[in-house]
Length: 170
Image 1 (spheres, rainbow, N blue to C red):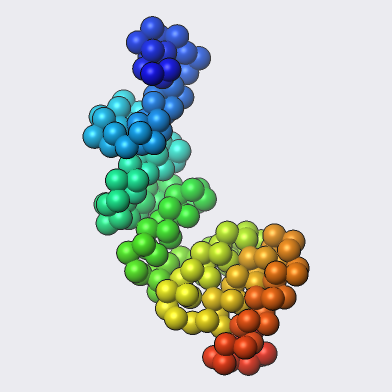
Image 2 (cartoon, rainbow, N blue to C red):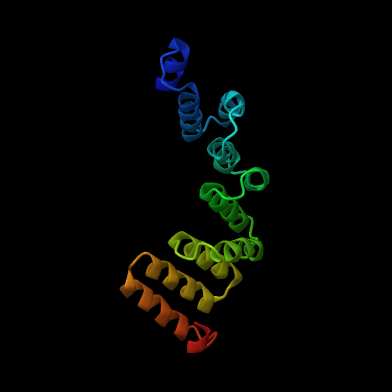
């Protein structure tokens, strides 16, 4: 109601920001068809933030295939923003494509190895492949990057006990 009133009365500092808020609130209210309609004027503003919002609509509606297609198209326009990258990887994992997700994650880790979330996603992908050793190693790396050494050591110990490899594979 707030965003609609602001747009109706033309009382806002930024029409784009107000429309963004309206679309985000419609997604939360699960009014996906209206969110799509309200997104149309926003799309005139070229921005990875707007593209991410557009991809959140099919994601929230439960259409993972459409969300994946959206993230792929958005990343062709904007290859670097984290939100688009994470959304893309999460859709691949939802669609049970962990090998493809791991390719993207491994490429990103080449340049941004300090991000705990990358390792968390890597752990999810390895778990989807049934690789307990690599899953717990990746989760341990996530904890290390987050400065949580106790849980990191626990994950490394679990990885060693998995029986899928040895100390040198960690």
